[in-house]
Image (cartoon, rainbow, N blue to C red; front, side, top):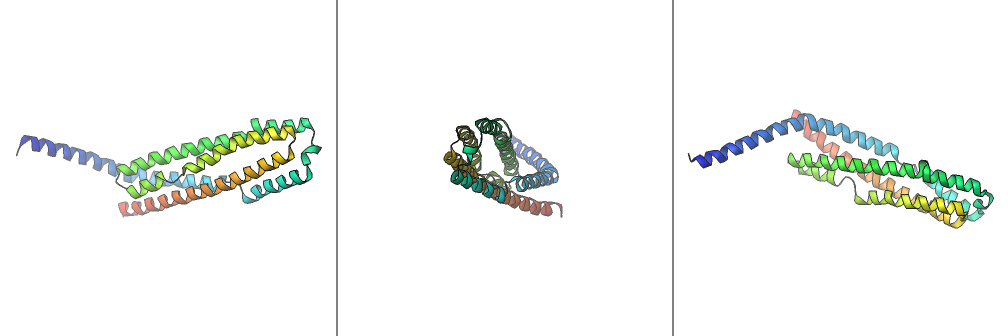
Length: 203
């Protein structure tokens, strides 16, 4: 046999052997690990959303502020304190923390998708890549300047502006909840496919 051909065959055998070892490792270790990781991610999404009642409460509060000019009866010092709490306390910090966690989840999911591309499981890889839409990040990003505007309008005592800010915030939260639910459904679909693959691998 031609030495060049023998060399090519040897390389192919080495590559196939290495891939086979990786495939065995991936399917016996990575698949079960990824299933649990994705289930935890889905659970976090389902537990972290803003309840519809809380969103509706923001809208009702907006109506009361606008119709009754409630800010007129709140001293400037108190409005300033509330505005500072929004900027430096739980308000904006909560959005920042959620955004950072979301970006980390997106990175983890995309890295996971690359593993399944290597394993030639394109259906799972494709589902993981599209689990999170670009719009969900944009929605969260839109809340940061909105919270800052709300703080400034609160300081100035502008009833109509504050009411408008609260309504926009409610809309953004409602949109974010819907987008998160879509992501959770996409991740669950990936889990279902992985569990089916696992059954095929081990049984």
